[in-house]
Length: 449
Image (cartoon, rainbow, N blue to C red; front, side, top):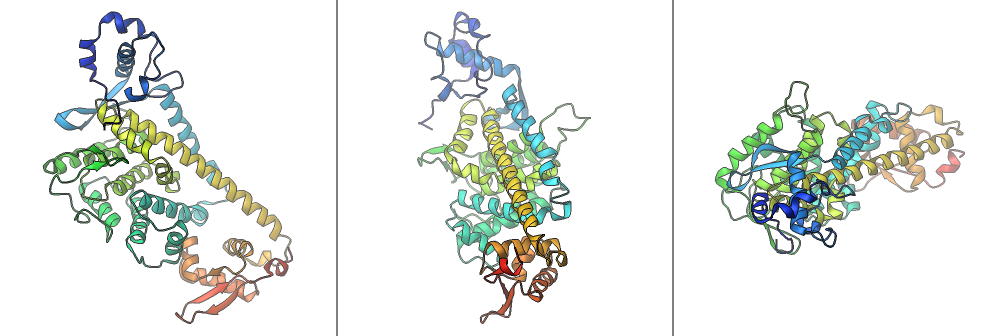
């Protein structure tokens, strides 16, 4: 933590700062700067205008934050409580995410994707994306192309990197499956066991809490960044975390409101802070984030991948943790960081959807000119779209069943229907009994496009 300037606690600052130094600044400095940024002392010190007391300005900022701060019933070291605040710029981001993810108009457009068809176009590829990048965050080295091939064909993993990705894919599916259950230590252990099956380091055990204090968290510079709480306090801390997760903070009868995304981010942070496992804490934390968002009715998060964006700026993710720990356990730093990540992820998803819609509509306009188009179901048209795009592509019933979230018999019927119309070529593999369906050259001409 030597690379970060650590601020003094507010009570020490008030004792060391004269009234004349900060009172005239109370109206000039709010919780954020003029651009809505929630700065840590490490960055704040460089933004203070010349001629203005840096310490006085920081005290004024801290007091402004304190007036809108809320404490939560989760404790850090020495029983200090975590707190957070929601300045206007954060309110605006949360509102924007609610608008983009709550209505779901882009996905819910009935002319493009019906409820039953969402998985076909989105969930498989995007759930796979999250599984791959979440694993790469933890050190998996398999390429995205090979990893996606493994997941699409249901091939068993052949090394630890592939195992991590395979596990994370199952983990995302489990978070969705268990979204209607309350959080419990058993559920946390189950998620961890799935995440780390045959892919765990530090002599840790899948689905088991650590039993010593040998674990320490390093930053990108291999410096000590965090010493987790004592192993003897893990069960008590996790029980408190479960109570926090299960308490209604967004209902009409609740006396304390916490935005669901903010709460999900706090859960994410706390697993990282408590570090209940010898390995696999990050994977488990992100799974719990998704579990809570889905539990709170944000169905769009079934399709949102945050790990790719975290991976792209891992140092910012680590810094957000350190800022919180070094400034009186103020969670706002981590909340801002994660809300920004989610905002970018939701925008990326919407761009992905618009691209898919445009691509599909263009294809439909194109293929409607063919007299064969009326003979096929929508799923077969989607297969044809891929076949036209990639001559020589090989399809299997298993791969299509995964991609379309249908059973293998239905997938086989789709494929055989295209074979019957001479639009795919069926061949048998020498190594297995599975039939392979190949996209032939000249498919465009056959469709008279």
